[in-house]
Image (cartoon, rainbow, N blue to C red; front, top):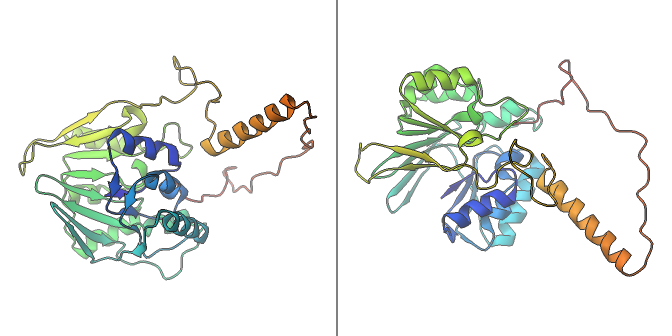
Length: 305
């Protein structure tokens, strides 16, 4: 079972390789923002996948179409999950708790609306229970509390990368012993919120973050109620440009993988032309840059995080 695939296909593919994963019963995409679905093709690369599942909120449309293409290329059916559904595997029960009130129509440019349409899953095994929350924000969290659903879990995947849009009431209802924050280093949204995580740590909760700890795993000895061991092993591929870390050859600090692939392909074409003695066409000069459509903050309009 894989929940979300990250923004790029390389990291999730490498992670699954390190874990020796050769097949996935189901890939569940909590919602269709690019930082959750962009790595789908990498997750399914050279692996048998039983199905790809999405929730009732199917925006942005372009992302759903990309997911459908990737699933079809991998030979995996695309299925829908809705609140109240229970999925059973040996030693794993997966309950779909949310979204409680999925909107009939969602503006794809409204990041909060798409986030609140995230699938919320409660995974139960003989040894540990985990609550997987996608990017749900305050309204969706309130809906879960009002619904009376059993939110208690040993492990909580922090909503929305640990953003400040998480209520203390929701965290109190979960009563997690360990909180995992999946978040990119140096993100422009300034996730996670230090005050929120600090309060959890002061209450005795084990908090681990992928931006500072890299890969995170929860280990148990198989007995219900046993102690949890939360371990980190650091990033297997340190961020290029970080102090004391040299970027690998051909890698520029902070450069997205998609941009790097295009630049590498362009350099390869140039080398081929030169080796054949042919002239290298020059790029047309660009005398202007299209400005971002900005709001009062001067930042690009929010399209999800």
